[in-house]
Length: 273
Ligand SMILES: Nc1ncnc2c1ncn2[C@@H]1O[C@H](COP(=O)(O)OP(=O)(O)OP(=O)(O)O)[C@@H](O)[C@H]1O
Image 1 (cartoon, rainbow, N blue to C red):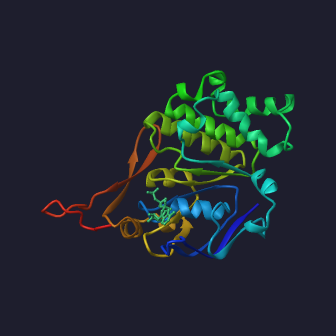
Image 2 (cartoon, protein in one colour; image 1 turned 180 degrees about the vertical axis):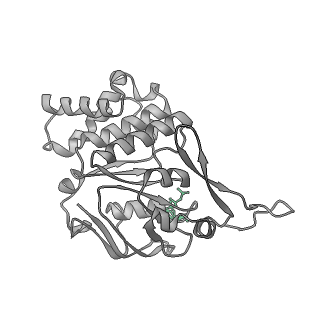
């Protein structure tokens, strides 16, 4: 299982060139984080990789075959996609029904989930610890619980790879930890993940490789130790960054902190968007 992108570029119909020279190979059995400033093109990149808005130049290949040549059903049986959690899309459903939607990638056009499918839905909910929420409406659970339900929905697909768009955004500390630990546990069992995140420290903690997407420059892909450096992050995020290890009794935690100034003396943003 592998995903590779060769010379990927994306230009929106209005002429906005958002991505260029995207080149990387992801072996699939690990976690890769995509990091970069707002508007750099991370979501555009995820959508391009998944063929939802294909690269306008270059190619993304899944298991050696261009994503565009995959039959959609076969492709979506292999990828568990976790979009940003938006409650309104699922408000009228129970959490059990929401997770069961993941099985639709495995069912025939007019089939309903059978006993075996429901068992897989149960297993997916168990995996992320939300079995007790099965009968609750999606509109009546917390943001963290909804996020876990969306991960369970992706797991119910029985995918080879999880792709998650900012899974820990909008979550409090504890729920962020739950989501990170779930992804980590799944990866330990061999299910790789690609995720967009706004938290560099999460990338250091979770991933072996990262893809840094600067604004208007080609992305940089590499091992965490090689590319998550103060000088590269300062360049990519356009603000001074310090990386420090914090030795706690339980473990050593790597902190990544913005230390440079974002506003000048008159209160104007130092880098105008
Ligand atoms: N439909 C569109 N037409 C034209 N430009 C677009 C369109 N959608 C997004 N963009 C632009 O493409 C750029 C990249 O957007 P994208 O959402 O991929 O960035 P991002 O890195 O995911 O941002 P964020 O971190 O804020 O989520 C932005 O400048 C955005 O304004």
